[in-house]
Length: 270
Image: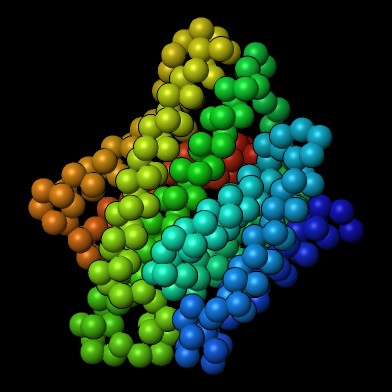
């Protein structure tokens, strides 16, 4: 069996306990879980990180599977940081971790698909900064999307008057909305910086400031969607299910820009 597949299975196994914990008896009674929560979240962050560092130790891997593992690693690390700052974020683990497990399974399925070489002429410094900002942006938007889903599930349960079971592990609607707005605000800033570094990277490669390819176009669309939502949140109080739809639109567009584009170029068109 290929070494990367073995490491991938090991990384997946580090995610599973953290994904299951919120739905255990202890998870229902203690949504923040104390030391057990932090221990399992730390393990879930270290597993994908070790795999990601192993895959990119010699050179940056551009394949679809490697991209997903990098996204998982970045999202877990950022989630740990947000959890330190927000109690509401800790209650999102029941939605976030299963999502990351699904990404890990997809990465394992396509682990043998090779990536495409980097475009020649790129300045490594600008490229590294741009990739880092892109990963942080995707992680922030993913966490905001999870927070918006928590709002949607909570509102749906309230309408049905069935606020019980696994719904109780989610944060309160007001707390989730505050967290969602803060994450979107941060993602807008980081995405804006990412677009600027992308222009610098493009200029270093061929002398042009911008190339309206699929990735750039979808990234700009995401920037506009998030900006519009933040403006509407302030001016008209857009919240709840309507805000969730807009957040998920932003998440969809940035997913198409990053892992979605990788899937098309490395899997479908390979």
